[in-house]
Image (cartoon, rainbow, N blue to C red; front, top):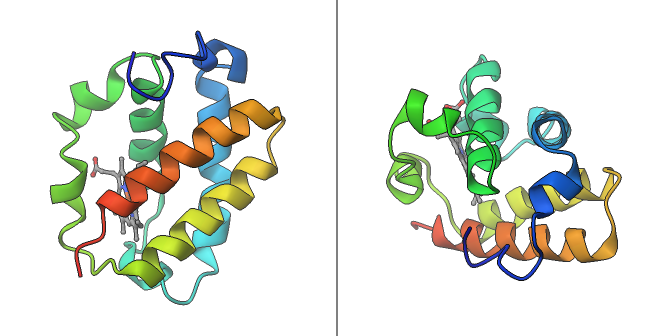
Length: 128
Ligand code: HEM
């Protein structure tokens, strides 16, 4: 449980569990792949990062804790320090995630909850 899903009991199961997050991350990465500003920040092979992001989100929203078993403590802000993230980068990242969310089969409440979470978390990554 965390501050974003206390009110909406078990949003993880409602969304469809692990499969939802793997699909969301695939769609999100489709946008990253063709983004001129963000693509160069990512390594040539996008697959490991895709897997890390999906497992992180699964763990965060109440699913299996595979992320921490493989990667240790998330330390998200410090892991992002190596990438120059300003308002512009943050906003583009969020806009791709929102586009990915909107392409999924979710209701308005779920969309708002996830959108709010991604917006706040992305703001915390700003480091320049
Ligand atoms: C604000 C804009 C953001 C940018 C530009 C950004 C960029 C990146 C990049 C370039 C990587 C490395 C990928 C790789 O090594 O393949 C990464 C990893 C990651 N990002 Fe972000 N990110 C942003 C926001 C976020 C947010 C909001 C979250 C979570 C909600 C997030 C979660 C992660 C996770 C879990 C990883 C993998 C960490 C690991 O190595 O275990 N990122 N990000």
